[in-house]
Length: 105
Image (cartoon, rainbow, N blue to C red):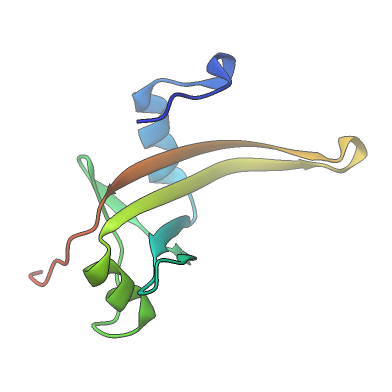
């Protein structure tokens, strides 16, 4: 796993799970059939250290995940636009893992 460049901004794992739990949506990054990057927003739910999102049984996302199951999930929470400072304050969590198809309820 890569180390954060800004150690002064690194938070404990518990904080990351809090961000995951309260984010409105997450951004799922994956790899396409030809090796190109592909990402899209997904709604998520967490149980323990497993994060779930729904998907159609066919389509580009499903094809990508079946071919290349390694993914990166980014969650962002508590955004505050600071227009006068040309920036946005936010908290985020980035998780790396392997997607697995779940077919049972």
